[in-house]
Amino acid sequence: MKSNLPPAGMTSGERLRRAGQTKLTQRERDKRSIENLIVIGASAGGHRALAEIFKHFAADMPSAIVVLLHLPLGPHSLKAALGRFSHLPVIEVENQAPLQHGFIFVPPPGKSALFCDGMIQVQTKPNIPERPARTINRLFRSAAKGYGDRVIGVVLTGFLKDGTEGLRAVHESGGLTMVQDPSEAEYPEMPAHAMEGLPVTFCLKLADIGPALELLVRRTAQFETGLAVAIRTLRERAALLVRLINQSSRNPGTLEFLTDQLRALKRDVESIDVLLKASVR
Image (cartoon, rainbow, N blue to C red; front, side, top):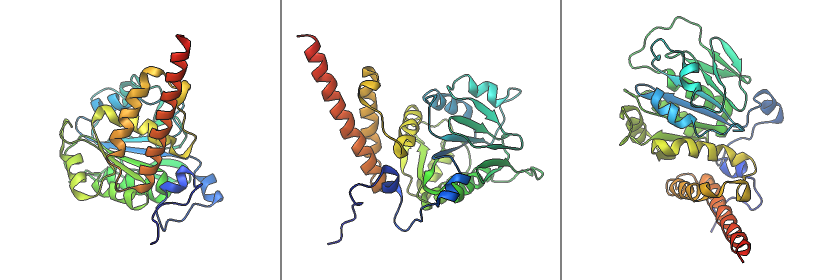
């Protein structure tokens, strides 16, 4: 019987690549220098949800993050409003900007944005209101086309259905998909429709989304656990890993990655336990 397990010795990134996908050439990677791209779409209630997510992002996060909102935040700028909750700098993109790890990019609310050769570009054509809005779908499709399995697409609280088809494109390109649990979303329609329309990788409570993203972008790098991680966070990280593992059955590569990290974390907890017992003798 042919095994579906990936060959031994593969990296986490190789395990996450789905069967039949073509690995980008070095030249293509040079043009698109980021290793991870998180795209987040939200509508009504999104500002409050983002504030909760951003506070969990570490300053050394190996990902570019792009946030697209349908609605402006009254007279306040998104940079000022959201930057208060983030360890990462927030860049408001009026025209275009080079993507970089460790930055949050925010196009003008309601405008479409696309990715091209390592840049995020705001569409400059007149912004004609759409019913229903499709700006999040366009952003996600462009991310999937440009970055494939390096994309994590996230749909948060909001009305209507924008984001579902974009998440489908991310899923089909080998990326990971995530929605806020509709049962606790301020406006559940957007995440609920995504859950009905495609096999979403993760459906998480808002409090888990930030830590989960912080964890998942480490999948292409060496995972740091052990004494470098504060002892008080180890139990929380292990519990989060278990919750993610329970929702990873549709993505064997991600399931293996998360299981490996849980095993490593358990080994580190055992090592810390031994050190603590030795220190009190």
